[in-house]
Length: 477
Ligand SMILES: NC(=O)c1ccc[n+]([C@@H]2O[C@H](COP(=O)([O-])OP(=O)(O)OC[C@H]3O[C@@H](n4cnc5c(N)ncnc54)[C@H](O)[C@@H]3O)[C@@H](O)[C@H]2O)c1
Image (cartoon, rainbow, N blue to C red; front, side, top):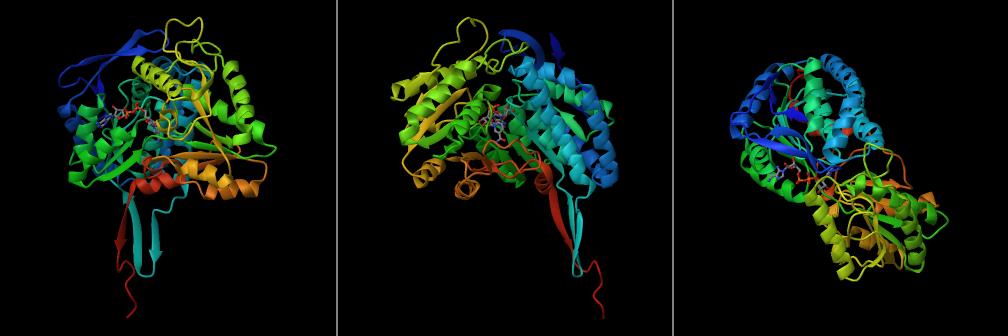
């Protein structure tokens, strides 16, 4: 049983102003795995004050100093990798292997990438007699979700540290264990007091207070579009920078050529990963109408091969994060059936033999039309929907017919055609032929998937203000 009832503020573990314990449930066992405290507005004030005070000195440190600091954080992170993986499995149900390689691995990847970018980042540049200086934006507040907890935290924390910002993190109250360990890592690495602060809490209290706080210069949220809108509204009166990484319902266009079978297989596997709980999951597969049955058969075989069960063991898929998420997914699967989509694999209820834990059957719907609820709503579970198209133009039109624009996928054997299709998709990241994750590729959304970009060099810009010093070089008389 984890007891994580304190907050990390000003370089110290401190008690909440008013203790409000909150149980965290392990989704595989449905048992309480630990306890945190939910904070209030006075905890937020205290953390923001610490971050504001630290900004005075931390913003003046050199890139070389911050590079050394990042190296120490990386060392401490590596030392705690096993603890971090176990925490992620316990808090949100990721299978042990996925937790170690991907969940913890992505966190390390963002720290390492930021330190490499920092090594030669152009913070200053001269244009004529003007010097353009890129300075840290200030005190940042981070609100993060439960599905890729360390990935989403580190892709904010790493560039913030690298650019000289100070910060307050409010992780998801549903998956707060790994964030708590990350605060221990920051402490062990000697991150100066007040540079990194952690306050647990719920969205409407701590999240909203951070978004509205006049001493916070930038609020960055990864979460649902609903929460992103709330954050932007709360932030508006103080005109702070608002960065949003929100939901998705990403199209996956499978072209009619030799790469068809491979494309369907890779696409389906992308939906089972992390139990479908990825904002960029390729959940809306588009196939030539004449090949619908073929696609359905390939996807069905893929779904039936997935091993589901205890995430501490050797399985492909663990549970989904919570009872609420399980119930939401069950309701949407039922709605798919009710609206007339063809259920070819999975369906409602738990997989056979799994009576405890929030396990969902890998589910495939074929013959889906883009106006059905299962094609429009982000399900955030292992549910693949397959839609028919008559022409590539129509595939692109259907692909873009969504309020979201986070990711899109194209597969086909002719690279030129694949690239042309990619150029017409309205999404922040387009993946061609199942290419591997690239931590240097900017990550973020068009339309209601958000504003701003994270990851790699591009992320730095979102943590910097631009100052023009005119007359820096005196004009010659
Ligand atoms: N675009 C991306 O990079 C990305 C990555 C992962 C997840 N997501 C999205 O996150 C969602 C799943 O995560 P979730 O269920 O934790 O989302 P959520 O929106 O319920 O919660 C996300 C975070 O926002 C906080 N929050 C909730 N309401 C708030 C409010 N009114 N004010 C301030 N903060 C508030 C929560 O406490 C949590 O920390 C999905 O929609 C998914 O697509 C997006």
